[in-house]
Length: 399
Image 1 (cartoon, rainbow, N blue to C red):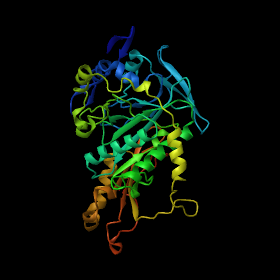
Image 2 (cartoon, helix red, strand yellow):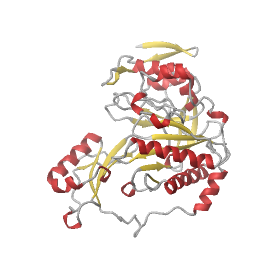
Image 3 (spheres, one colour):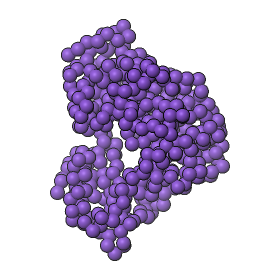
Image 4 (tube, rainbow, N blue to C red):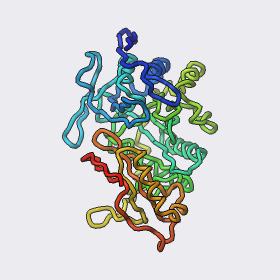
């Protein structure tokens, strides 16, 4: 056990030598020290915002669980804000304003920080628009960066300043500070207008399609702007093997950036050398009015076709597995491929649809296959699932 003094408080670090990143050997104490090293820059992304706790209590190679409610046993200096959800439930979520509170959160097993786009003082009016660029498998990194530039242009053309950062994973984030005077419904409508306009301007590389099997290129994900959604904040460490960091950039850096260059080991020195490219982000809050006018001009967004009470499938998609853990799902997929080798040989990377689905408190995994590139006569029918996990009942039945 270890106690550290931070912001005038003693913060207890339990199991400081626990290895969080097996490939790099970084421990929990290393993670705490990283966040203290990037201190004020990391706080800029979370300060005053309620956050969901995404806890990797056994390191990044085990599934995290999501905890909305702050632990009942907590220091009296840990602030909370009460968020109320449509279900009628509420949650007292942690709000960090100083480095002691931030270190306390990391000690719980939080690798990345996941704040809401609102401040605790006004939970009804978001002050941040977030665009998450999510490439489908097989898409070049250069296309992700090209899409980011188009998103920047769309935001600028409608009165907002765009702020770029690596996601620390496969994608890229573009943020904009907004005046906190409109409800979440307007924020989501504005973000969807950004996505549709990016697709209109760059249809060869970008898509705003909601259904995964209908996407190509880079999905401009506008859905992270809902009341209950969170995104890994600036300077968050991500749960990937090389301990990458979601790193703010200048737009001049974007064309040549490589996400693997920004890690727990490199980002503190970068920050000390060049400062935080997002230091002035709070000085550039803009209005959603321009994007809402764009949404009006674009007209209603196309809705997915529906049949009798449920969505009508328009592409030849079959489901392979539902599993509690990703490796279980992938093992099921390998068994399916072994039974259908000729079909598997015709699949393209984007035809394999791997979804991390949010359960009660953790992510479960679904694998589907789009057979669009398989001749119709050769397409296998829907079979019993290779792994049939019930995320609500918790039963797993691997074949």
